[in-house]
Length: 265
Image (tube, rainbow, N blue to C red; front, side):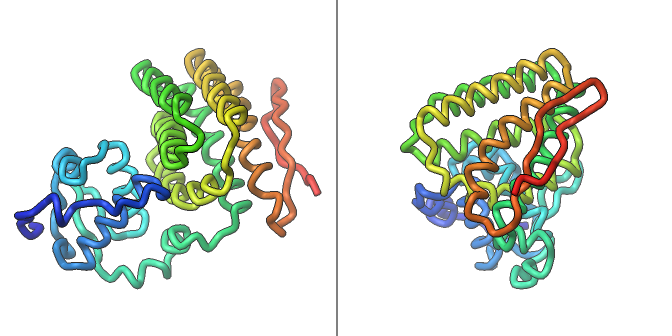
């Protein structure tokens, strides 16, 4: 079991770095606990509610951080038992794909193209599988995103990522969700360079609403097309300086067609 924490306010306090997304700060704090020896290989972590209380964060942000650490092989979840430390040799993590993702060794173009592939598939699956409660939660998360002040970069990034992560969870495909979560830190880094205007921010919120509209009607083709349209805006904004040849993606969806990549330049 983890060492007793007699001063949780001190040892679990997050870094006051408002420029970084909250799940990233949580991930850093959990890494520090492992590196510092407070958590050892085989130790069971406190329960999610207890960890959220210690860190003074929402469970959704905590879960995102834990999933990132899981993808890196640092922690593991044991069904019915909770989260456990799997390894403490963090230097070896970057030898794996997950470590390369965490270290942001891929271009923005790489990350965004894979995101489009994963999240548009998630949208179509969510149209078939998402329950009413999940759709209501998506609407609430988008309302939070819409209310965010564009100058509050942390809140804009975090509220947007909460929406997209919830949509991926609504697809009810565990492997797809884990693959998507591996991209999140790199995607957040992309977004920190975007600095959207209020107009762009409002357009994104409206596009979220359109995705939800198709999800509520269980229209998997419409949901996939709407998500493609939404993600292409970020793709076009953030890949302009990349030396990788940028692709164009048609969002036209016919009876037997789906969005298809084609050469753009």
